[in-house]
Image (cartoon, rainbow, N blue to C red; front, side, top):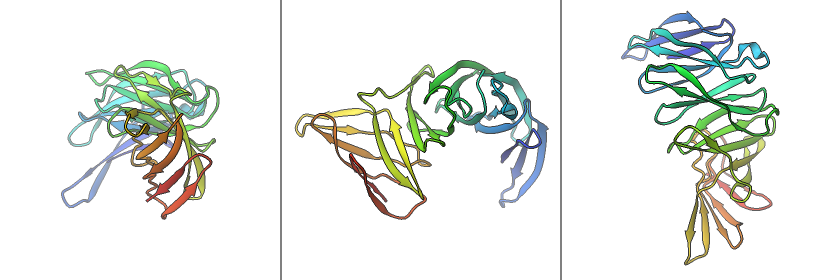
Length: 256
């Protein structure tokens, strides 16, 4: 088990025995200030974002090797991305790229993870909501690895990008994207995502499949008729709230 401690600029690891008891911690100093979000690759590489106390233009990330006993060894020191107030970390399914959200200016930066576990800045701005606008925070990659989603905390919106093979992020085109509003707990948020379109000539229907991660609200399918008019939506899932049906301006979203 690993925990970043932004108050002390340190990273702690714990071992868990066969009975579920935690032992430790083993603590090391973080390479940079304010270690925050992190992701762990399949081969035991720890990628940590560093908010640098929220200083303008000082966002960074670092990487560490994790041993079988939970010991941490730094591989790449702080690798800056020129952005501000870095937050979450999400890894591609093949562990080749790491995306970090930069709360301070509403951008997503992309790092390349090398075979030796070192980091290289791939794109300072791989994606953005509105560059310069604060808000992008928690993020996750869909189970199939095709989409990256990030919460825009201030605008109460969920933004999405298609993930390319070389790490590039493609935003939804205005003519092919989709927006919907759902209630999560007591908040109403807007979902904005790229779409995958399947044609059904017999019914003249298009089907949208955004593949949202489980920790977010998932729209399983949205059927459209005619010139892109949304007919209905099925399976909008909110894991933390009671069953509810919400009628919006353009579609009916059912939560289960």
